[in-house]
Image 1 (cartoon, rainbow, N blue to C red):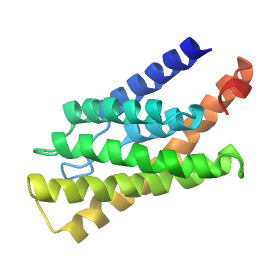
Image 2 (cartoon, rainbow, N blue to C red):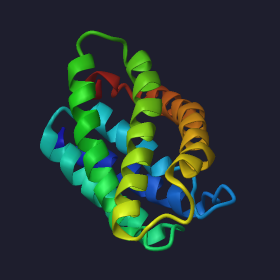
Image 3 (cartoon, helix red, strand yellow):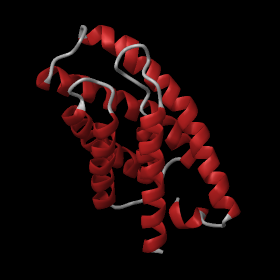
Length: 173
């Protein structure tokens, strides 16, 4: 069963990296971050922090390699590690109390918001921002939250359907 989870985690991380690479920027050197969707799915199917932390680091490295933001490599890694840690705690607290669909509908916007704010904050400290923080927040983070929530939930429902068909849903959620 551990091997199955490791393979599934690797597949989601790879899909997230590919989606991050092919997603166009939103006019600025910023883009919706579908790698976050992959990260949140990995966090949903795993209950241990070690996997969450490693997944955050790996997705951070992949997004750093494919970022369209000048100098955004280190901010991407910082953002994914912090987001993975915060969302792991959040999902752990909600896991036993709420339906997985509701959890994912809450995790997607909150996690994307945390990621966007963390990225902008770390980028402003490390390399500087091409515009004011508030402007970038409204132009890039808010649309990313909306897009990630809608498309991320669709992707999550596809994953759930695939797990039902393969009778794996009880192993992971």
